[in-house]
Image (tube, helix red, strand yellow):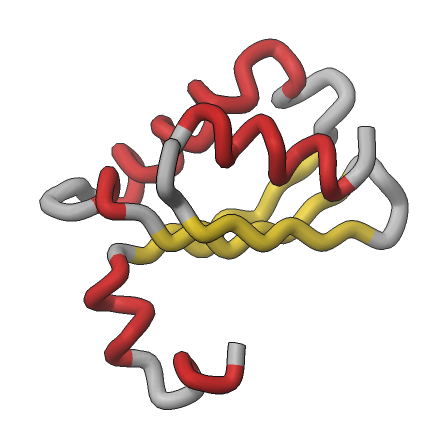
Length: 84
């Protein structure tokens, strides 16, 4: 599993989301996901949405995943939002 595969799974599970996934070893991944689906959700609920999109891949092909889960408003409010 590579970063593009993980990105595709998350994008399919969270339609319309902006998803960026990076990896150095194809088992440990870092992600930034900006999605409307996160509005009104606590961080744990946001992570659960991402895990649901990955299904059984999480813990198997995907050994570890760091998640930055933001609403579009939270992303826009970041000082470096325009440079990402």
